[in-house]
Image (cartoon, rainbow, N blue to C red; front, side, top):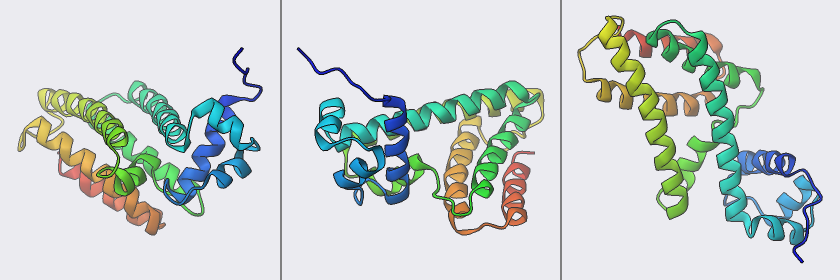
Length: 193
């Protein structure tokens, strides 16, 4: 008879995510996860098989939470350009709300593991495809309605935006001045007008 989980899996994933976010995947030990979650090693192994599977569940939960915030933003905005602005504003709000920004877990994972772990690379590629799809739709709509210029193909602008979003999150780990970060956003969005 299989053992029944007697803990809140969502809470454990959040606690583990915090550890991975603080330390990165490689520097996180099983003992760190035991300490953070209050579970013993056998419970972690029985529930997630290994640290790698737990990390993928953490990435998935993190991605899902961002997806929910993104959906809210897209519903509130009235134009594609405003949607793009709101996405950057969301990042800015997250970065300036914390005294020490840990960056985006997915961006951090990309720099740590993208070329070293095939399942993680596949996860990151799918995440990139989803975000590029959103950005491509926004830019194409903006170009069609005339609020975004047609100097570049919508796919080129989408990749540019995706790249600047990743760089923006990394910059925000070191630059905490809100005005400087808002200036970066302004420069990025001006490129589209």
